[in-house]
Image 1 (tube, rainbow, N blue to C red):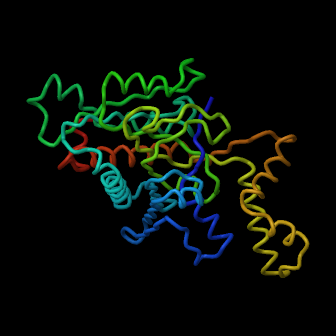
Image 2: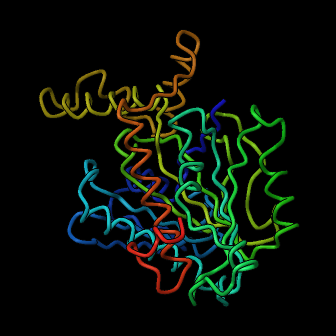
Image 3: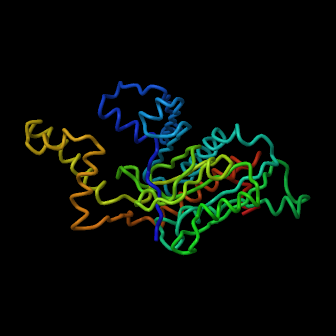
Length: 330
């Protein structure tokens, strides 16, 4: 069974607050930065600095970064390379205070169910990683300078293994003793427009299964004893989110054509984003259950995005390594 993580980034929480209070609303203890790469890649960084800011957003203190990519970049080599480099820069920024030596080992964990395409992001990333820990130990003379010891695992999901993912990862951390863990998972988005168009990073860890109400043991510094960077891509969306976004589009059209006096507009416009979502979810669940939907082109999308993330990790962890060098080790 899929264990998608909820798309729970601070960017979305901030958007909900600005929708409620206006675009000029500044959240105390939260710093937001935005930049554009190449004119088509958008990077939004949200740093939650204080407990007050964490309370406002409902997120832990830490750094949250969203990389928005063109919806149809697939097959375009220039954009693909820029995406890889952008992901590498984000990871370098998040890990620069953690990795202080080229000998620091990194454990990469590909979360998810490899039997379900939309949930196979983590395992697919592992397939394209430069795995070097064993080479550093047994063939050091064959390894270039700047190559860091990296090991990886795709632990599967509880339904396949009968073992909590957190238990597997914790045991590995105790045995391997990495300086840092990178956990990759597919996400369940709370906005249709974010599905397969964003890569989300944070330094606060990750909770598998949260997106579909199947919350498992968290993977973070408190549970594993080492810092955990999380990488996620919204690959699916639930029926309530699709219905909610559809209603919002209808409301915008009603506002433009019939004005804000329309009864339907008045009913739904008074509801906050989360209240609206819960109302819709509770209304459709008895009749239809909790549908989780993936786009029809999910196979191609997962293949391309997993390569982007893997190459971003490869470039960020190994000094002096570029895209042209990766084939020597993969």
